[in-house]
Image 1: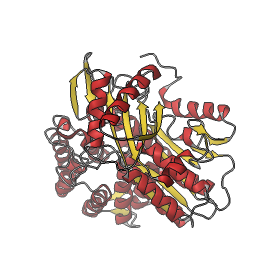
Image 2: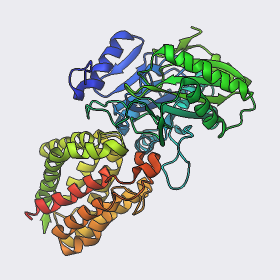
Image 3: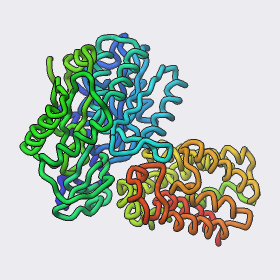
Image 4: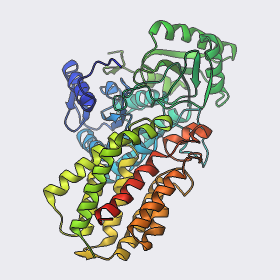
Length: 330
Length: 199
């Protein structure tokens, strides 16, 4: 494999040094792996801390800044960060108004954030947690770890981030975050596996002419393998999978998300097909975001996330945001 | 009787074993997980041996508590909290004695495994590290060699199971037919006990 790296062991640290150089508006602690907006803690403002494995960029470090996250903790590639990072992040952003941890539903992320919340509370920081679990490909039953958190993470971080920026109190920011998660559903498709630096070869073998339906964002295969489909057929499959699980009454936010290696030309073409299916199903799209936001290294493919919004959440979505990976209105 | 030096040897032997088997652990993790179990544990146990050299705690309990805390601080993922809790809780259950009997250790290790089950919510048969640890705990009364054999057998027996916890659970039936990487690394940890005892 040809990869633009030095050695696998320093990939994350090297990326953090580069992020710091490109974004002086961030404080990047390369050694302890914490990315904080430079003006934190902001007086009276709830701190938003998210984190997870690296390899999903711009999630989460690319979403730190005014209007979105206060801090992010990147773990090793596809591995949750450790509690020490989260406690450090919480301490850096807490102004006394409390901190909201935004956690994707993976066992590692959940366990480490739980431990961090306990430790942070020992230090006198008020902590609330919201779990993101929007992936309809996974059966949510007593017999699995539950649904994965994927594309909806971006909606939760943006909308709760806007609420925090307005100075809303912790319990309100938490309930908005929870509501956004509950109103969001995702489905992902892989056209290729990805290659992690630790392994150096594709994480699963996907022959030419086949695709994986119902993937997560960690290079794990999906629930089902089928013969290659057209963009139109994939859009039909993905949107129906999402709509089978939700019946939006209001207009929705739409995220057409690239997994990392699919060109924007293809993503926009896919978006046209997704919008066509949504129109056929009578779902009105209020805002659309197309691009690589919640990625899985060099995996080709895309995911579709819908979030049912109301006037308030749509207003918060439109509120100004200034981060490395998402910015508008300021 | 087992002293602090025995428990340091246990950790060193585990680190060496994880080093030797890192590629195999990662290969097992690849079809059903995200292909990093070997490298994550390697990072953690290197940190454990480094801190034990630096701080050299005087009691068996303190060695394991320190090792567990170090794993939680360095591994990440699910393995960090789960292995960290296993060692911390085992260490805490050993108390402050300078030497412990094999029977005391067996009881403490069971307390550690119980804590792992409580934290991860996994039960036997869910295709996790528990499937190697429970048989090991049950066999500890017959010595470290018996525990090693039981853990290895438990790890092998995860192959036909469907994963219900952790990332492999997202694959549903497709997780069947693959040996669980967590159960495999747990069997390495138990095997290192026998090794530290010169077996």
